[in-house]
Image (cartoon, rainbow, N blue to C red; front, side, top):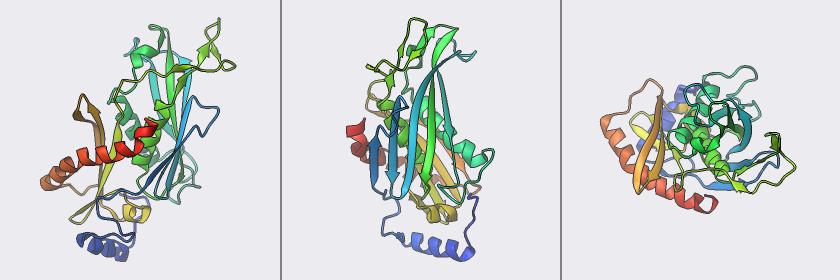
Length: 271
């Protein structure tokens, strides 16, 4: 599953300690690391946030531009998510065209955001079929110590929640001289969160460090939101050849609402 496979000795050691319900940093198998948020990390972006989960650190910016709507959605604005995975963040990343991981990370963030309908894309139309706002979400990992997907999704949600709409001048162009006072159109009460579960042997863990992540054989990531007091799975993607058993998926389904409330409580003041 990882681009930098661990030695058999490391894998066996991890498998043994996980089977005992333990981890090297003292956490339980499904216990999350501390989360910290920094707002407005960029004065050039319409919205931005920095997220730390343990030692994993991600910066996310939201920029708004004017473009042509996609042919299949002339009455909606556009959304595009990109990730810039630089070697400074991890020895797993290399310069050059994005590899599978460089494509998968922004795609999973995109799906968690898009399929939750958090953004009211229909309110981003300037001239139907001709001109709409395009939302650019840019992800910049600074330090990869595992679980980048969930950190990046949190960063995207916080940045969107704090995004302001720029003003247009008389020619219909963005006026960056005017202070933005209008909030970005978001669906009330919807804040999706991503949760990734990793499997090694017969153990399932959450929020792995990079060393733990590199030993695992499979991962499944869910984009979860709460809509009208109902938990909604908006996206799901699995990676790795090893299957999750029916019992393991059942345990994950039981955990998801609890973990959603746990993380949502930590993020509440930023949402």
